[in-house]
Length: 317
Image 1 (cartoon, rainbow, N blue to C red):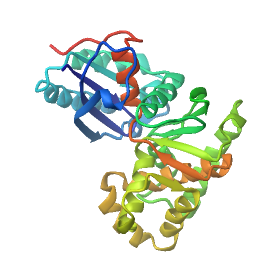
Image 2 (tube, rainbow, N blue to C red):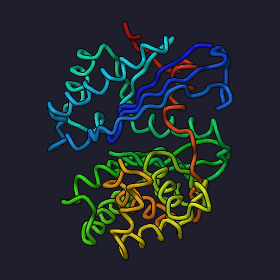
Image 3 (cartoon, rainbow, N blue to C red):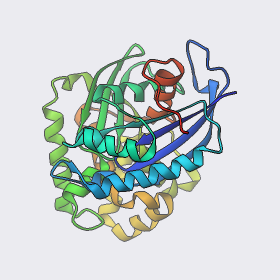
Image 4 (cartoon, rainbow, N blue to C red):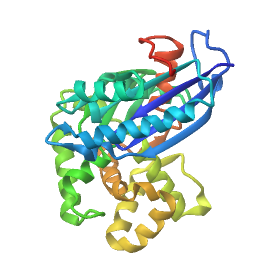
């Protein structure tokens, strides 16, 4: 059975996944057709290296260092194909082409830069491989952006990406480690302004949300830490998200104590991410947030690699 490597060059983390695929000549795939052999994450915080819309030399060097480390790990898996894709951090910077070229030259990887529509759609493809998504809205809260996808009768449409995520919210609005009340309000105000400008605003109104991305999973992990007897929730309600935010406001020290146990690498982005989740649910009348196990990386594997709906990338030497 062949192995395939996928590297997600994200705004907050750079994650390497290696999948073993049972049969790579099928015409459709679900989560039963492949399994994860490796899921290795490096919290890179790349969006923090963007200043005045320019991805800095230091940020480029940091990305190169991490990718070289992933390259060494990949040598143990004899992958049939290895792809690297990038999202908001390289898509939204003004020196995107130059930064990508420097990273490619230094790592021997080719980087596929996903468009906003690509990112939202592939998130839907991945989430759909593990769960039935018939009606609702899919949200993907990353480090540097938030994707929204409307779902009707199992089909995705009205894909949009907002250039604000958990890490960029922290970088732009929080001076310390944890957001003060005024900083929380600034995050919410900035995000709401972006939402209200969406031409497809009404398409996302639904009581059922589906969530992918690190911020959604972090909220679920924290809730499980607070209520271990309930286990990791597969669904979070708007009331539960509100509870997490209120717990932080009432007893920040106690909140951080639990957060350090649940998601130590996301302590600084946890509250910004929860604020975005709550804002979305409140704005569009959502009552439930169903947490999906698969997301954009699995969507990329299925559509761009296994179904070959995209250009192949260079294999490692």
